[in-house]
Length: 376
Ligand code: GLY
Image 1 (cartoon, protein in one colour):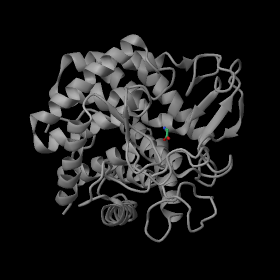
Image 2 (image 1 turned 90 degrees about the vertical axis):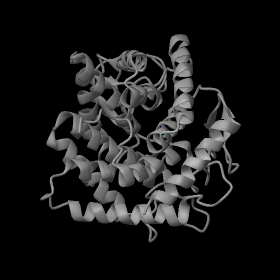
Image 3 (image 1 turned 90 degrees about the horizontal axis):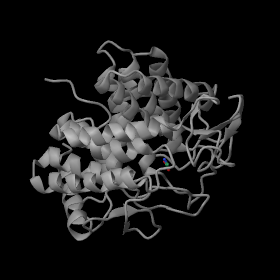
């Protein structure tokens, strides 16, 4: 049933790799990608798309492309190019760790571990958090955590599993727990960011970067929470993370418009030109499929989660995907930073990645690159 959508997507990914060798897609407002160097937080998604395409097609073209990207990520880590942030999991999980998962490539495993070392170095012992953005003592962002970080934690949990060293998983667990306590609000909505005193760890208050207001709920942040807490539950088995993922998901699904694809913020006034964020719905689809993989058959929540998957994926495939169109992106109507007027109603490379991951989960049971797969 999803095969046509997957094959259309893989055709576009092949063309992008052929037409833009050695470069990575970046955000524009132009209904096309800007292709440039590996120096933002998003390049791993392009590599992840190549790995998914390889796993589906077994065409060595995609594997070679992904391996070429890994060589680029290695240079980036050695030269520390634009790595003063926590999005190391997005970058190295979907490139190096994926290379280990798919090909059992020892050098890719080593690179993924080096990346985990870099990420764990962002743990601030005094404040007790993993700093999201900027160097230590950064005036604006020194004491700041953000909900997106939950998707960077799998790299740390994995590093502990593979090395037997608890330090990575300890940081990941503490960060997930801190995120649960301070980023998730009592009504199951979420803050995008939260500030702490850098010296004492005292919680100072919520904030936002990409949301409509501090107290609103940025839909992609909520989506990162859904998928991120599900993954923390997979690694830790702590039921509080499962419960949190379900609560955030209920909120997300209960606040969707009629076509089941989110606007960019749950509190923004809806007018004729209000942007959607299809990427938030694609991430949430993966979160729901992850939950369904984790929940026992008798779990009473499976029914509404299954319904959520079906509604979301039918809408994305039938109304938002570029199937049959001449296009670089796979999903239309994503949003990056609406208040900053950057990436409006356009393709988002992570939206493309999660859309294809969701399709691959549905069609082939391939769950992306957030954890190692159990031997059959
Ligand atoms: N992690 C940044 C974003 O979701 O826009």
